[in-house]
Image (cartoon, rainbow, N blue to C red; front, side, top):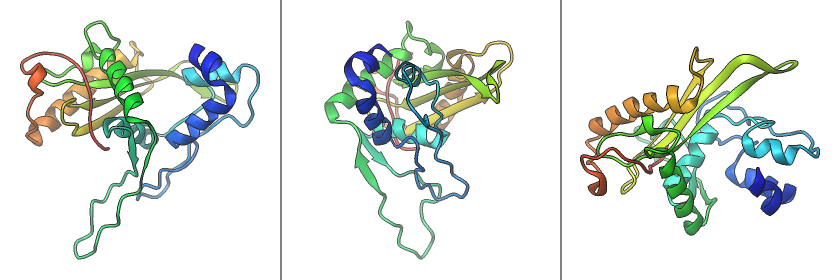
Length: 220
């Protein structure tokens, strides 16, 4: 919020929102995709609300595609469900750069810290692999404002850091008891991604073999 107010301002913040693809469809090959929701107008408080996730709504595939772009060195690739149809030439994937390599590396290091022992998502750690990611805990909006006691808990992460292969997004709708993404969604990420790494026979990171640490990944 401080960065948005002091360094970005409304115009540059809107530009970043557009660059990440929020507010428009990704074009994934599956019917029914929505564009998410952006503020219809900006008031004096919007510059403080949007950076912390209030007043804006993104879809799971939008969010996963942005984290995949971070894993891809800052290049966004249009997500898809169907790899190819037998006998037909697959279309070339659409891509665009959304982050410079330098900014991408810095952001990745920050996301690695989230999964470190001192971060908010230590439960997302996978022994032998580095993981990078981010938690999310959002109160659900209703017709008359935010609804008491109703939340969406999220963790999206990438693994492994040295050779990105996976992006996994876990969203839990209205968790009971504990509501925080780092406590309810991050452990699910570790189980899902850990299984997938074994299935794909992805070797552990050399720098963290046998360790329990943090870092990055591939496309959704």
